[in-house]
Length: 476
Image (tube, rainbow, N blue to C red; front, side):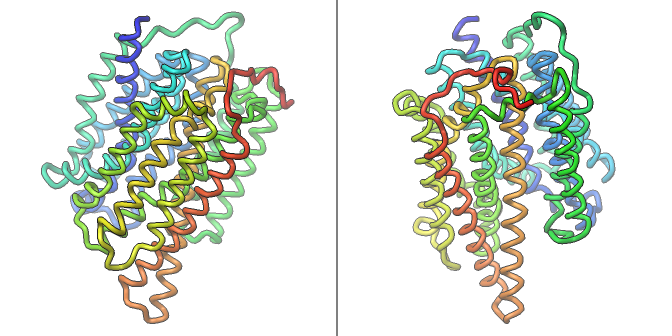
């Protein structure tokens, strides 16, 4: 495959992933319009988001493994088709039930696309310098796509309608499908006896992840100590334990447990959980701070994130690869996370009558710089130890860690902010001031998450990583 074709294939893959990343935030801006048009109640409206999160988070790991077994290109095209058709159904939905069902289907397609895309990139680019550059492009799409989605969602909803945020996926999905068929290399046939899907492992881990996601995204509404929340988390833990037991005994496990002996993969996933917990919470809560405390419009909120996106673009699309080749993976990871921690600390001291240039922009720039510096080497560290036959599974694990960490971090820190605000309101503090203080506490705790992630990166990541077979490090 020529270098030009490889890079074109990368851009097509990243365009497909961008659709998925945008969809996690673009919908949030349109929720009030969706509620008014289809008559959702406040309680039911959350399912427009939760239905997607439930299937997306629950199927990431399985989607990655299916790619290993049946071909990443085949699974990518299947996921893309499903996501595009579901987007059409969302845009045409005339009832609440149809919209929620279509959103759940979108989540299935999105999980498959996300899980296999990273694996396809590692197969397309085998040379260290090229892989570092390719991961940088992928990292930018993942890191900056959320804020781009918020801006695009505001523009489309205000100028057209909420349906346009889904229908815009249709021409993109068709173009990516046609280009993928032309540019992505055919799946190679596996040597030896064909592998069988570990159905017991697939059912238990998917059930565990779905229950965990459902419990987390509803934790604030139902209460973290409610019978339902604790019961669902307990059942998820039980299913996860059953999954691990099954994996230790079957001949062809869905997840070879020896993968967790790969130090950089294990460390990168823990860092991913902590980092995304802080970053997801910052993204959503800072948007609320700008809108509800400083009085920004939705479009102004989207524009406020542009400087951070530009910095992430500069690093992800060139500087990060050079830094990795020059200094390795460990130092950029811990330094980037330390800069992100400093950015969150600046947000934790932002005043109620904050000025954008003094109180918002510096923190935005540090968080953009930190993400641009750390995201690419963290992905390289996670995938660098893994054999090609397990690359889809490793990709699914990494994406699951980021997704669950983000969902859990947002739920916990939003709950902390709400509790702080409610306590101050009970003491007679004015509403906006109480809201502001709640956000500041959440930013401070988020800084603690990223600081711990920086510490782990500095202490535990190996400077360089190379493929090591999970089979050679059995855990059973």
